[in-house]
Image 1 (cartoon, rainbow, N blue to C red):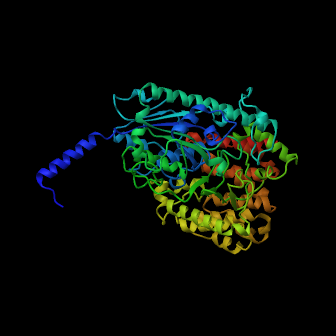
Image 2: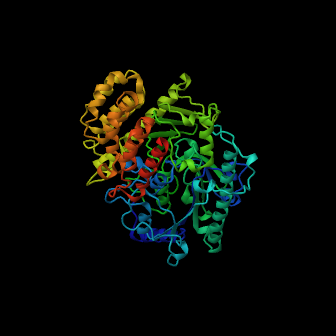
Image 3: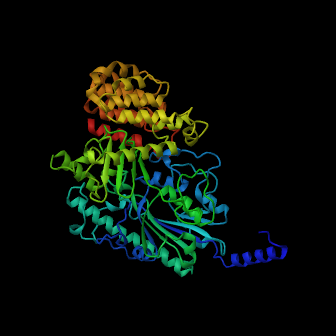
Length: 616
């Protein structure tokens, strides 16, 4: 029906009047804490004392199934700030640095363009290099109070008191009774474990008070009914087998969202004050959700999906997690969960869960746990963390919330495992997982470009073939030897790398029939293939004296870069006492790569110190 001129004017006037009654754009406040799971009273933890966040949850909505995507801070924050999986941007490894393609921005930049004042108090810790202006203020003084009058704001306050480094500080008089703390099934019940868990809960209470103070300031400024508030933790607790591991224990985080009455229609019909939702959400979803609430269309490149606001998307069936290099130790794990199960795919099953990460071993629980294992005083499941991994793991969170009963080999679970396999493979292809290659190649392949662009160019990175090679190599299937040998002759270095890795992972079982191929691989153009070949020959053949000089040479960061150095030093350490003859040369290695990011420099020194300590 066509409107007459008068009718059109009246309709426009009515629309204008209606618009004038619409509430202004919401302010958005994020309260974030470090290294903690959903150990809040509001989440049903009777041991917790968190009155301020419990009060927020009583007025807001609890998300029962929120995942951080990464179980350690820098890659987790990278997922948040970009709205993209770090496995897609080459930023999955701890304290790495990669770039986004031109035109892609960190999400606060889009808010600023729309007129928001964006403040961050104060941690950033991204694995992506910042370009342009991301924050109006990112400092210890950042606050919404510094904005222009009536300017909408997006403000972040980050609380560090729950960090791993704080739960192991001694002396500490526990306010929570260590005798009453709950111990997960994978941890031994020791005084150290009880003290660390009790101290963790003490720090949660202290953090809760800090959150309460920011909420008091919001109310004091008369902004409580104009501000949508989020609270979340950045990944699981800073305890071994939680932090750094893409289980539910390392990825499950608290997420509470409060929306004032005037914005109830904005957040959507599913939002309920005092409610609880089982919707699966991940950290990649936070950026598009905030943009949606601010009335901004999330950019098409964002891989997360808004779960609130007018641009909210249907609920996902799965959320995904990952593990790459953790400080000085390489690993490669991908995980997924639905509302009941967690599935883990280990691409380096020959490595033990509890690789020696020096920072993790500062925690008393870690040291006590490892000592008891070495003394033979533990039984499963407490022993599992110090042993090698199966290629696949499946856990039923309903019957096994501590994730210690692996169902992956159970015939009754076959269909569930197959479903998760396909989901994880589909996610890797859809997001173009560039992390399925040595870390150094992420950087070398993307010179003059970015890892994201390389990952989306099958000529430069044949993902489908690389993924297939990684799947076969890490499956540990005994009948794959011929295929692994063939992979060693491939034109792509990532395929050759997985051919060598597949032989290394099978160890002595196929060593005799692959020696010739591995000796040829010592001359491969890729340093990462050479490193794997040298480790294999050193561990499973009588070739240690031949390959150790090659590994020491590759560990020279000034010649080969920090990533090859880390890989070569890990291989040297895996040779154990066989490397003792190289001790003087290892001590003389340069500890810096001037071309590497400063954040990655200390890892070489940690490895050298550990190798020297073990060999002396």
